[in-house]
Length: 606
Image (cartoon, rainbow, N blue to C red; front, side, top):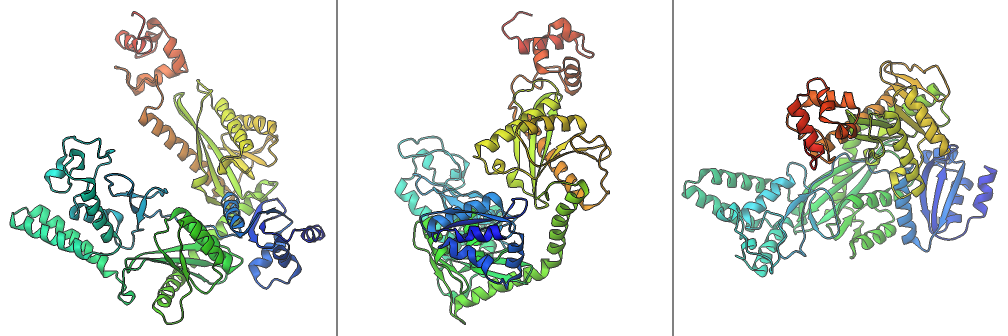
């Protein structure tokens, strides 16, 4: 502690970001400050009343800091470092659902609406859609109400004139591809559709009702039923209107609720005066309520578009949030702290109630999961006598199809839980034969080289533990590679047959208790690596990404492929084999051998 206090005294009184580390040099907290010396001093020179702050400080053994020019730079750097290190005591936004939006690129001459779960800066987004109304349903209403194109053909006013498709015959598209509508008239229809997406449903209801009546009158009952269903969906949209708002307003409402150890953040999405979505997120740790809101909102709007001009929050410090929102949206975003008993305050109460209900519903289940995850990490360290608690585990597996399509997977388990965004896959480039050892050597070498580059966040930090799927042979190869790069942490392999765990330079395996936390954690990593590698292998085979395979040769089925690869060991050897050598393989007829030879020797005579 004396070393830390001495370091605190020498801190500059400037804006910056500080990084707290534990005894194993793991980053456990990242914070920002207008005055680094003043902010960091508060942790170590004052008595901490908050139990989480006290626990964090007790675990700090060192800290780093970065000086920046102003608060805006500190805010951005803090956000980037939280993403990179995922510190235990910071807000880490976890949401298993990626909600769908409807997007359109208004810069196109003839734009079209489509569903998207990924965001970019060029498109305009509407949504998210949830709570009984899907983006697919809303897009279907647009398709039947507005004759806009459904295709993704690149169109411009100067390059058009193809034959219109069936949607033109169905009166569901004005066929801009055939120059049957001008850019100006088309955009007027687009703007009508946008009005609907912003909450004005009156015109759409009139259009659908008129079309349904016409279809029914013409005895086109199938179309009439479809339109009736769209009107029912429109009624569901209208039923979510919050009448007290009295206008087509767009808000995002944030409210944090905590029971002490467990917390949740609820987000209400109000679009066009309607409650369009309710999202609730588990919050495992936070030290300061102001920082909790700031960090959460920054992470939230990394994956969600800012579709509002006003955000409603409780009475917390919002200056940093406003700076971030204004910069990201490139416009003024109003952050409102509503007065008691106002309409906006009631929205805030609604969000807080949803967060509270989420806590009550999930507290027991989530507590068990967290305890199991963190408990497994600690138990694994004890059972295997590891150097550190394995808070970041990487597991590697090799997959191939009889020597072809050889790939590898790297999966990451963070704090006892899967971290799919950190998973990475590799196409093996230097191994032509069936050689899992050489393939493992290549993938670990590439992983270590990527760490030196530091360009990919998943490779930018060293794991506390590396798991190799296999026995002593695979482990020896891994030791050879990792020793070359001075890997400082733990390495093990897991043999499948008896679930034996091997450590470097130890002849006897560790036998972990079946069903215990430690073994289940290792199995989780191994099974994920195996699944991820096989999935990648299958996708390559399906896409035909490797040229020169046997799949397309007449007479060569799965049995013959296995026999050929078993005999010749690699595609390259099959490619160089003569017809006589090919015929020597059991099951390969002369005609099949000739087909194989022709496939690989197109310019030679048979």
